[in-house]
Image (tube, rainbow, N blue to C red):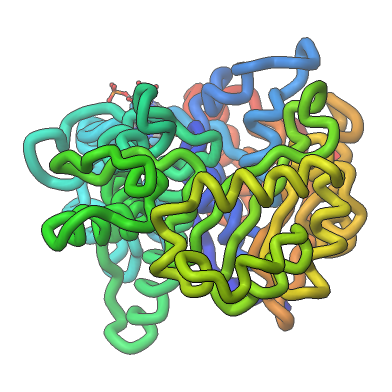
Amino acid sequence: MKALEGVKILDFTHVQSGPTCTQLLAWFGADVIKVERPGVGDATRKQLVDVPGADSLYFTMLNHNKRSIELNSKNETGKEVLTRLIETCDVLVENFAPGALDRMGFSWERIQEINPRIIMASVKGFGPGKYEDCKVYENVAQCAGGAASTTGFLDGPPVVTGAQIGDSGTGLHLALGIVTALFQREKSGRGQKVLAPMQDGVINLCRVKLRDQQRLAAGPLKEYSQFGEGIEFGEATPRAGNDSGGGQPGRILKCKGWETDPNAYTYFITQAAVWKNICDVIGAEEWKEAEGYATPPERLDKLNEIFGRIEEWTMTKTKFEVMDICNPLNIPVGPILSTKEIMDDDGLRKTGTIVDVEHPERGTYVSVGCPIKLSDSPVEVTRSPLLGEHTTEILSEVLGYSGDQLDEVIASGAVGTPKPMAAE
Ligand code: COA
């Protein structure tokens, strides 16, 4: 049994933010029915194509464990089918541009009329307000949510991060909103609207930077490297390079091989509790008790010197040797792993976070499995659906269309040209 078994999701999502949300719900056992425009489908199917003719990795890696129905939601018969799906499903998830669902004739009021128990969950770029009508992609959200202004180095421009905190991050927020609304429905018997604006999701993830914004009123942020460098703080939280975001100073330091390997680096945290161990490891025993070094507050204006000294040591070791030496001493360090190293990691494969998936068009590809592990709801990653692969199955098994009625829906052109059932 899976945690969300029996929950039906009408998945009207596309691109990244919405699909990551419904993929998680599918991994937890929900029946996710992805509605796609006939002949076109989710735009990502044909974006960044690496295997000609096959669905792209962009699509396959975001849409595992789902079923696909082709459906033109602007055609009259298509609207009837969509209405039946809304009647049948527990949750409708969408991340269209603002107003698109209303323009199709499916406002929240109309959706509630069709099914008062349904939960309608949306990702939008911005919440209600002056930007609510804007279309938004990942990096816009990173910029509007405070991530870009606080990422990068002090002497450089704002930088966006490779972690898709605007899209996948908001997908996660939305998934939590959906399961919470499902939980409340158990008691209230009613559905509700769930909104996860991308800007708000990024702001939530930048919470500590807004903490620092307020701390500026009390003086310089002493754990930021710029404090020790004597650079004045401005009116907003500055970019802090690789400084740690918390109370334990940290940096990215070079390791053996850094001259040729762009990822021969380690993150090194000078956690106060293990300061003496750090001094021993790097051969700076004199710092253990020395005035100006012995306590964390004293060290804050000397971070460049301290990390410079630690780096002299890390440069003599590989990033994995640093890990092997520091871990037993409780010194928190972390190798800078490349995407290649992550994909080759046996441990991550054992836990199902990195998986091999078979696909009829592209053969075997590597994907990221479910990052959340439930002991009673194991995840089996199955491939993403081909466009309209389950159209007939959904019309007949989920909606109960058969005989002439089924033929009429197909003849209307609302569902493209369905493939025969059980194509596997
Ligand atoms: N049948 C018929 N029409 C369909 C359809 C279907 N099955 N599925 C989608 N469409 C239509 C929509 O109704 C819309 O038509 P309209 O413009 O006449 O109202 C049209 O396709 C395009 O949808 P839209 O959402 O505007 O796509 P886009 O490619 O222009 O914009 C985004 C893409 C991501 C910028 C936009 O959807 C958006 O801002 N979404 C919210 C924020 C978000 O999730 N961003 C991150 C994406 S990773």
